[in-house]
Image (tube, rainbow, N blue to C red; front, side, top):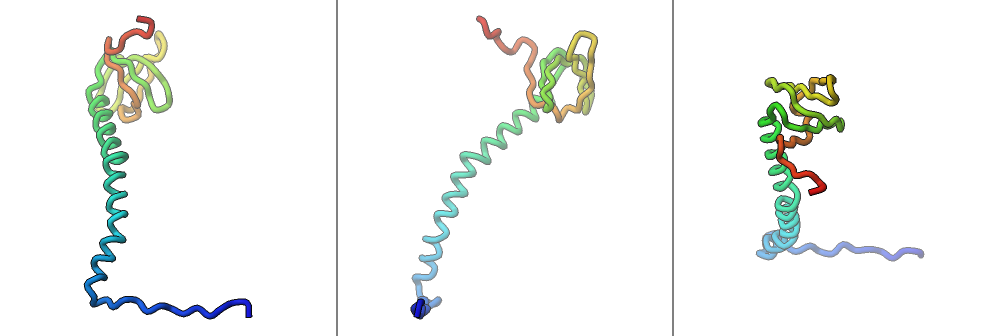
Length: 114
């Protein structure tokens, strides 16, 4: 024949004390992986999101903003849910506040050539 018979091994008794310890040994790496993911990925992302929401809520006239679509301009008027952005002299666009991806306060950044 081409194959040999396979026999199932008898599993340890569920009532023995080793079952709980074996379960904990198997689940410990999964818990450890979740903790690592929490501190390296989830927590920093939540912190960044809170900072961005605070910056969007605090946007004011004169700030330079970047929209999610990549449009860069200067804020000329702020309303509850919308912001008017001047993208060129005489060209103003109304955008929803939540589509702002970056807010640069007026005079907040140093010039690159200094």
